[in-house]
Image (tube, rainbow, N blue to C red):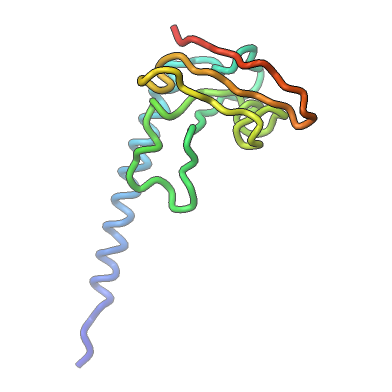
Length: 130
């Protein structure tokens, strides 16, 4: 008689789903902390008419973030959609980089390195969280 592997496979899938749910909940809570901490787009002169989005400084990658180390408030920042994804100077386009200046990560001062695709250099800007 063949062994029944179906029960073991279902148990493994359920365990993975439970772990993923825990990670999603932790990320939602971290994003709520970031929204409360920043309240507005942290980029100097950010567009306040755009919807605000929480951006990860370190991309989660194709496998998500199983360890949860990239989805902590110290590694996330609140930006308007233009500076996060769709503007000419944005994280997703690769024309904006956020550099935390203290050990507190994005909870402290950050420096924005921004450049335009047309090669016009924008000077470095520092924004302090109060």
